[in-house]
Length: 78
Image (cartoon, rainbow, N blue to C red; front, side):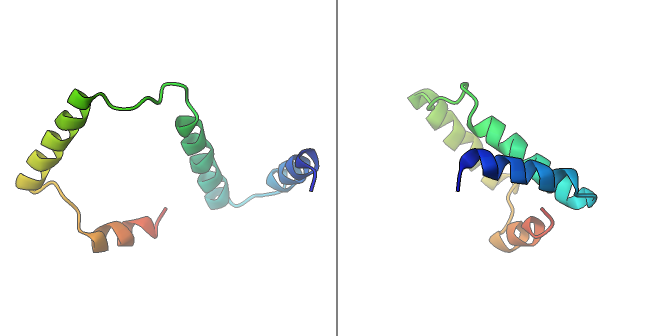
């Protein structure tokens, strides 16, 4: 399929959607894509990496964690 045709078909389909939940989910996908493709993404420095580990360990010790079950339950609402 030609990419231009696919894009036009998607645009046409999107303009006909009236379900706000679908629009909201599509907007989240768009924002995620923009964040991922942002040029500001760069690897951690070694110091940033270790600082991130330290923060994670402090969060665990202070109880700022979520179980896998909690994450899966919450993700159903995305």
